[in-house]
Image (cartoon, rainbow, N blue to C red):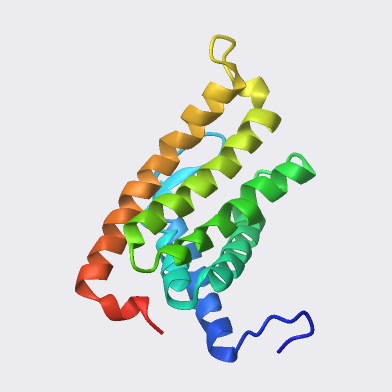
Length: 174
């Protein structure tokens, strides 16, 4: 038990480290890259969500926060303090929400990535409104911009999670 009341064992820390590293590597395999950040990758969200199914949402959220901080350090767009929180640790922490749906992993994918979308959407509408064409406004622009790559991530992650669920269900259990 650590000083903050959260029990994390060595195996969990090792799994967090491995899944974050795998997610970082997969994040470099980009299918589509948007000009102001955001991309469709070859399943970079899957390792974090798989960890959340295995170890639960708390461990998944911790891994997502670490992944978000690594993402920020490696290729982050940093403009405002609150924007940093919304676009990195909070957005990727949402991946841990998949762990709430261990028995229904596809719903977990949709919930986790919808949470990520909402975090990026708020950041986009509030902090990047100046990029919105006047006829669109910041909310529609942010929804379209962020939705364009998050939808792709939902599809790719959903397919991979489904195949793993059917072909290697033992990966979803400790």
